[in-house]
Length: 296
Picture 1: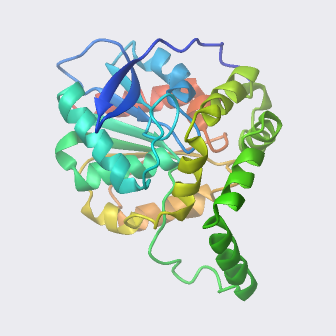
Picture 2: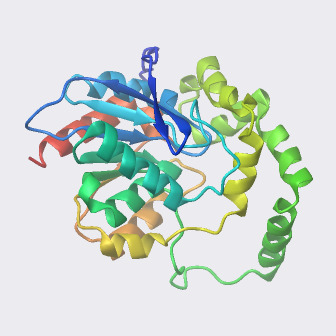
């Protein structure tokens, strides 16, 4: 299997939003014939997770990547974190800094946030790309039966996370470099893509003051608008890219669910795990580049 060459992240800068510092990077030149791209990371990741994509896509596009509030190099205030908060952050960033509608591309949690922007703030979106996107649907359409044990355990865990000591202990466990590496080994098919640099990029922000409170808030905050509702409101073009080897998401059945609510989408399935943009960046960059240039 071809291994992507090591790519150094380009230096970024900060934007002040609601008295908080938001980190972002920018590369490439603005083109009159195609919209800029805005890349949105998943839970626990940052702009660093897009370095291979920024490097590749900036040859054709103006590319932006941003750290959501509470992650990466952005500020980590003790706020209530939700899809609505990050939606507003991105919408105002697009309005105030980029200055024109963008194609949003998000992985996992970043995909859900991108969907919130494209559906609820459509003036900021020229298109939407979801890569192994997260987010809750309203129902499970009878595909599984209720599991009373799982339901009870779910309630226990939810109650436990309301306790500061419990969420702090869990955070201290999951932020260990050895645990980060083991988690990556589960969700990447190509183990050679799991570098010391990748582990360090995920570990580093967890040492920031306030990172444990962000972790707790994400689990305590009520879920945002359901994916099916957002898809029903979506009027922008949609590209979906799935890593079929994702152990957290059944890509084929979840893709079918997206299509049932929004049939007019384009989708591709790749031999990769939860983060195909980092694992098979050349394939993802090509799919993004071809699709976005085809929008014009």
